Length: 350
Image (cartoon, rainbow, N blue to C red; front, top):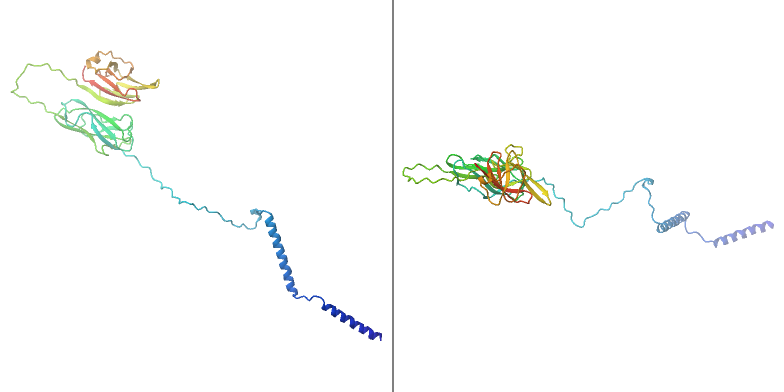
């Protein structure tokens, strides 16, 4: 009986356990789906925590040396708001051009007549129509034709800028035979190249020497009248420029080197009391003396009390005797400026 009661009790216990188990919730997901759900929830929590840290803290730069791999960064490109022009192409420097223009014959118009052997001074006025500045290294030079005892080279005095004007003079002697004579002249630059009017055309001097009068048996003889000879000049010129410490030969009427034995005087300039003072220093035995406002004759200069001393130059006539014994006079212009111009005449004989 006890065995029957025990067996029945066991059946009742098992039935109660089954009824209790029916009251527990029954899982609807498989074990694999439950694991995936837990992983997704963990990932969302990690992402939310990272975003929260990024919003609370400023980003920190990681030094390049701590990175295993350098990530290239973008570079900003400035785009101009206006078009940019290319620089101008380089050009080679262009040299200047030497060229002269004719303005006037200051003395001796074409076909002026001179007796054979007569001395005269031809002067031109020219303009620098080129783009080079003419300096003292430029010269007036004989080109071709009849030279008429003229010098081969006459240096220019001072500078002539483009557009400037200059008066050029040369002392000549008429040939001893009758006829028409024409000499051509040009300018020469510091490089030795010749140029002239409009580029390469020469300018000229043209004179005539008349034939001597023929004898005529029918000439009526009159009582002889004393002939007063006209003064003949060894050299003469006007508006001759000269600069400080330059020298001049009054016998030939030429600017020459101060080392030459033919020099008659050297022009000297001093700046004193806020103005320029101008002097003539006699050389090689030449003598000078201030004369006055009137033009002197050869006889006047012989009696002028000439001296070897340095002479102050004013705007008045100065008498002189050259190193060759000829008398004459000088008249200065532009006194007071940095340089002067002067007129002069040297007589052939006392």
